[in-house]
Amino acid sequence: MTADLLALAAAVDAAVPTGTRAAWERSVRRRPAQTVRGRVFWSCGRPFAQVVGGAWALPTQPVRLGEPAQNHVDAHAVAADLRSSFRDLVCDIEPTQLFVRAGVEFLAGDLPVPRHPDLLVVEVDGDAGCAGTIRDGLLRVKALGCRVALAGFTGTAEQRRLLPLADFVKVDARDLALEGRPLLDLAASRGAQVVAEFVDTEDTLAEARGAGLQLVQGRALERLAPPAVRARAASRAGR
Image (cartoon, rainbow, N blue to C red; front, side):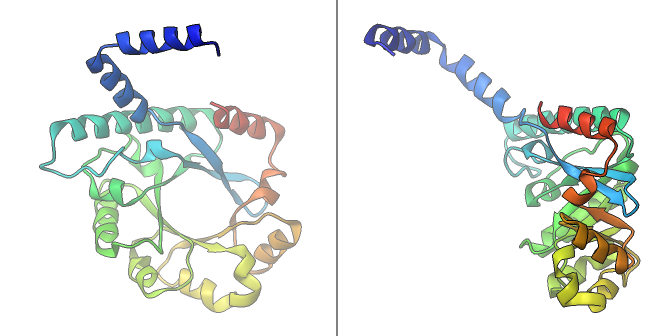
């Protein structure tokens, strides 16, 4: 870029009012991208649920009652994006469940959930800290009609305390040969459906099926999905 163009760019940048720039930056922060991370399948290959990640699933910063009003404005804007994305995904794909990864900020916040909470599965990392905050948040979203998935289950004490709240428990399929039946029995001990994650090879898929797991997530099943379903998922991921 020449010196003249650099000078012109600087002049244009300087001409933008500070208030306009701040409003634009807030708008960009509260409209993060949607990312389709994959799907959960029945072990036979039929889609069961969409798995979605991305910052839009969380407020831009922790939001709690009593904080400045602008934080609540930003949080509700993010919630609106979540509702919009949720509605579009549900009406546009075969699975009717939507797994959304949620962090402490979401669970500790005062955010509404989509208008079909019965179709939303709030997924949390069982190894995350703030176990009390996570538990309180999960109780709140379950009271609103959502279901809960506990990801990365390895049987730690914190994870076991969250088991009674879990409708789904995800285990790493690559650990099945080492952990075996005791881990699966523990994961299902409070009535949750067990999902095998990271099923990326045919061997891992066969192992998950051999263990009796009906729900799986990973590239091995993505390759078996019908072309039309793969095309819709790719279209969403490219937005």
